[in-house]
Length: 344
Image 1: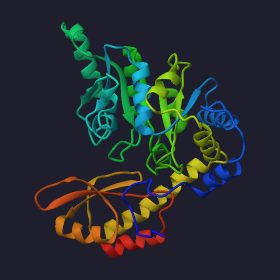
Image 2: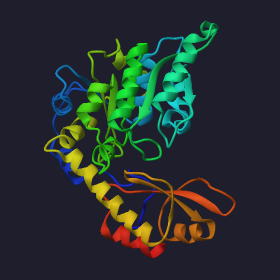
Image 3: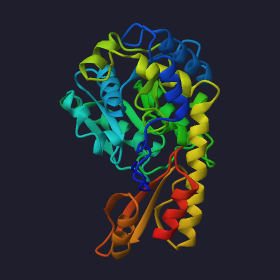
Image 4: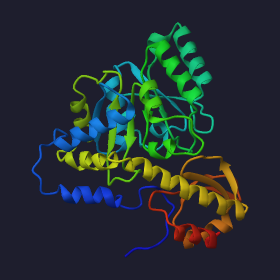
């Protein structure tokens, strides 16, 4: 059994035991494919209930990159692109998946991973005031993630303002929730899942990084599912024939609040990690209220740390220091935190 301590990411273990139990219990049931089974239907209803949606459309897809690609490409017209912070996942860490569909990512400088509402308004205002805009890629959607790539969160006021700007310009707001569970359970958030459902046109609830083996739940919130969305998803490798695999997992995650328990466990572990980092006098690259912690560490110290535990090297800080990322999950234990403290 591989027992090396890892803070490399929040998907370095399989699935939460309760999710695996549900998969095992239903394993021999003969079910329809492509998300048309009973469990996908019940999971979709549970998600709509917790989001406060009467008419939400929910689809269960394979993973985050496929989900972003399918949602964005299905909602944009040929001459449109998607606006994102320059640090956004679709702009940096998805190998050009959105561009591969023929849609351009239009980047705006972010602030601590977030897309500032004032910068978004200025970008849209300048674009539509440009007399040459017919020769340019039109902004047809706004993409944000919550938490962001840097573990930061939008406040309720920021999310509301972005939503208002999108409504003013008649373009949809898409929220990437790959780590949504950790954002919702942060001790420093004033945004709930019902707020997201009300303020966004489409968002997804991440499963891969929040307790599932794989899978994301896409939620169209305003009776705005694009025509033939399943076709878009299938062509982009996002739709499973065994749709039950994802549906059963989300049925378990939203049965009795397990999804939120998983998020809370990771946040609690992150808070304990922060106590260790403070004790060891580590410098933060950014103040993250979620399960991702970014630390500036001396290169010599980094090599010793890498010999003891698995971490993610984020970026070079200067000649002598490196930014690393330490990530907790529902599976992080006291033993893991203690091992980090010894390694530091």
